[in-house]
Length: 473
Ligand code: SF4
Ligand code: SF4
Image (cartoon, rainbow, N blue to C red; front, side):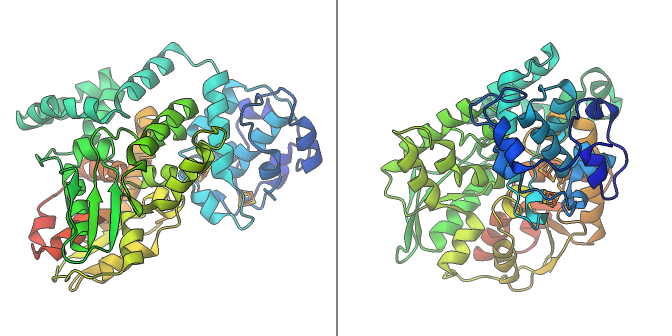
């Protein structure tokens, strides 16, 4: 029996492929891991997953039921505990096998396990370092390489994404999208394209924000703002709402053009060198802006930005600057609660289901602030979603790389959302908005969707609930 079998809680037998890689017979002692630290095995010496973090895991299994892949498949090696076991094996000298990589690839990086773990295991650090090793050391198939190359040639580049708006708009408005969906052809011939097609949001034309917007009334802070990649290309109305709210709450908003990607997508997918390049550029862009805070309205971006200090720690020219930058990063809801309200909230009689984006709730610990902002709006009723800790299956580009299980998780989330009976789903991440909207449409359901910023903006401007509930999935 392997050590993972011995420590299993409720899960079934691990996959054969993984058992074949196993060598342990009991929880790995820290000394054994430390001794193996400079060896070869699965990992080289560039940011090896840290043995001391691996040995923090006491195999209790409290994380298992919050892990979406364990929930889907019930396989130990597709749980946080199982993946930590595989990392331990790699540190002990096991080579990086296809089976190991498959289990690492299947991790959504949702960090629900970090929230659930009573021992404070830094699974986030472990999987990030592991993924970077996988991308450097594991030969992928030609198909995998081509798909990843296509994704990373487009997604982290706001200008390239914006070029897609015109063709996508024509495709949606001409009725061609409905025809293609009804035919089922795309799903049969090109499942990845079909996934992207289903995820594509309904486009709205919104002018790009100016480079600087002055605070209304007395200035309380100068705030740099990330416009983002997907956010700026497909949800410009969320950025416009964010700027209006910040100005109304007494902030000068600084929005330099050409700010580029923050590197979140790259770092979450093991492309560390690429992420470092994006981070340096963003630090350069905002460093002389005089900002007190750097505000982000996309959860995945915010969690990476707060870790710029660690990301650029090895770069003597940027380490201190990146750490200073990271200390100013706030999620929009976090900053607004920190500053306290000054603008008048108008009533918004609407029932809201609030969805915790994983990289906001689990990775940044920001749960109370968005709820507090929403509850402070007169007339708004807030409802909680069942299984809130389970990821919706979006997870950056995980839903593009793993369309079938992502759709399963999306359907599960959509059912829980529709089960609240709310008329509006609110969340703070563009990926979640697209993923849940696609799942709701697939189920033939209907619910309006909005970012937290759009709800608060509608209240501050006295627009009424219809301005939000008209935006249906
Ligand atoms: S990050 Fe999410 S998917 Fe990955 S092991 Fe943790 S809970 Fe599971
Ligand atoms: S990661 Fe944490 S919760 Fe999961 S098995 Fe290890 S110690 Fe327990």
